[in-house]
Image (cartoon, rainbow over all chains, first blue to last red; front, side, top):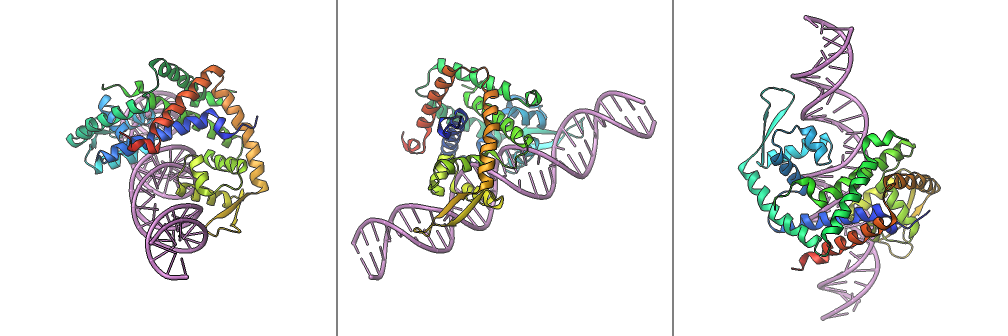
Length: 150
Length: 150
DNA sequence: TTATTTTATTTGATATATCAATTATATTTA
DNA sequence: TAAATATAATTGATATATCAAATAAAATAA
């Protein structure tokens, strides 16, 4: 059961996602935008759901709270985001996307759409569906609360 | 073309790999081993190919040179690895896995085998083959030298 | 209503990722 | 062979990942 690394599916998963990430980040930079994919993802999720807490944000972009704190900090520093006290819950903050953030959000969206198209140029709809189904099962099988089981 | 994040295949790829990584790392820790998955991967690759350079090592585990330098440093500090000057090429080092390293390599291999089995418990052989094929195409489409093209 | 618990976020420490610059040595070329 | 170039590895800076501990406020229980 001592397989070679490159025969292992999770190794290939890593390879694919890393390759795609580098490719995508490179193209964003080349197009002249000053934002990382992770920062963009956080902005994107905030736009989809503006009243989200940082904790929910974290779990939805698969990051932990500490990372979100730091990414938000950088986005504020770059003037993509504004952070204000929450009117009711004083533990929380209200994160508001700034005009500069909306700009970068939509501009980079175009780059990302092109990236995806290139990355998947010879992958069929059906294959993508199958891939999604398998990925979802992997997430189910490995999710936090599953860890204790057995 | 403004899809929701969770409909996007690369987002799901990230989700799956992160979920698996956390699951796997948790189980390694729980089993009492003091090694990260990345450190283990480097050891594993070194065992497969003992005369590899750090640069080749880097590209085979999808890391950059700087990361490898630091991971090797940690492995040496933990006495899993020994680093000596190369007899012929004085720019290089010879990395030798120590007994302690061989131990951890094989013990953790068992944990990892179990992890994989659990993570893929309801995924068929055929699905894995298809997955591999799609992943390989993604890597091809996004590989470094492809970036300049178009 | 005070005490306890939970929730939201931050901070510190360490590991890894990425880029650029640096150092040292080896190889190639003029 | 000297100069130019390529290769191997390290270092520094910054971003992100993860864990644990800390802080503050809110919600719940006694």
